Amino acid sequence: MGRLLPVVLSALLAWIAVTTQALQSCGRSNYDPTKYTCFDDDFLCPIVEGDVLIRCGEACYSTSRFSCSNFTLKPFFPDGPATLQDCGFFIKFDPSFFVCLDGDFICPITNGVAMLKCDQTCYAPAEFGCALNQLYPVGTPPPTCVPEFGDDEVCDENGCFTLPCCGDLISVADKCRDRCMLAPETCPDAHT
Image 1 (cartoon, one colour):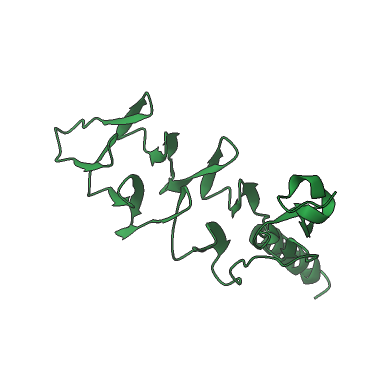
Image 2: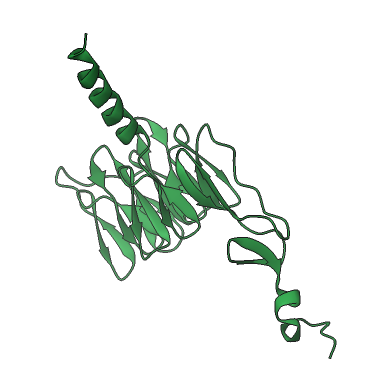
């Protein structure tokens, strides 16, 4: 039994390390780097079945199906042409692989399920939710705005999350503050 304990403890520690991998920040969203790639510090593209999608303007695309030129996706089909649909002015897409959202944003279809839009990111609804234009892992509470003097950074077993301050409040030292109290001269009703 004494020799089995170190093996069990090692396996348990390895499992904990894998399951508690920290989320990373990309703009206002937190993401799992094994499932998404962050572009320009504020734009997430998913990794779909091992295919890392790349940013092109405000869309994500597979390099095996499209190329990007001047922020415009151009499809190529090694097996012949497909019927493409328009999504906004600059995006054409194959509806068997993508879905058009909000009239100008495409997200991939993975295993028959269309990804959804959250701000400027596509996400898998089985893994993430979207609130206040921010992604949050399924099973954790959605973000809410933080009132004055509230902590805008929340940490749990999945990592740390920065929540938005309510209304016109700004974040200073991990607390939401009234900008007029910090710099009264910047407010329209400033008293001198």
